[in-house]
Length: 249
Image 1: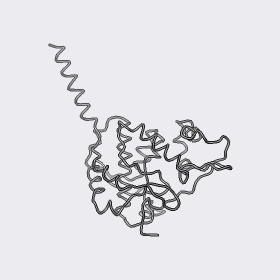
Image 2: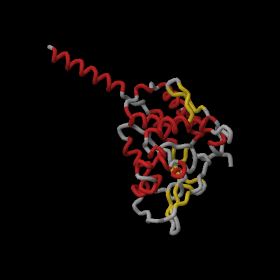
Image 3: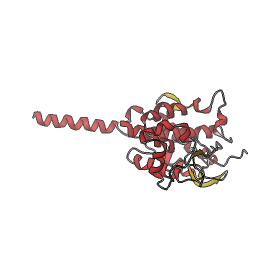
Image 4: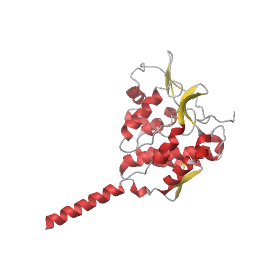
């Protein structure tokens, strides 16, 4: 009898843990991401976002409302947290642009004294967050450098917005895919010339984040084995124009 009770209690505990460790239903956000198509802007190949369509459909606002209602206590472990906060960052970045449309750059939402990154971007489970809060206070401390190719600051030179949500079960492959695609984009990720290696300024801004992977050079060669040795490094100019066809020039 004691053995049976123990089994029942154990089963209930396991069920409780399974229930609490769940991710949001990203169905509405998946519909939002259908408003992305491959294109070119300012001679850069990228995934273009159709902001007017997002605004008109109301899907982005719906995805944001659903995001705000998700109980953060339900997230269990690093992988679920990474996937959730990457999606949250991207939804809030999209919302920031949509709320101020039309604009030429997301940076126009702020200024030199009060940059957009530090402004309130939205609420998660009753707490207001900025994009800076999510990137620098939540995601970067998790010591996963590939987040830099998953979070998208709504700009031309940012990594492309993925056309499906990040999920805990698929995260490892999704992050690898994002890094691979970005570093194979010669117009904004990595470009090899005879004289130098031109890479995104992301690596200039966050070099310490790649130390856990052996440094920037080792990280790059993990995804691009064709990089010649001993090439001096230079940085590609970062294009902050919005990652959509804005009517503002």
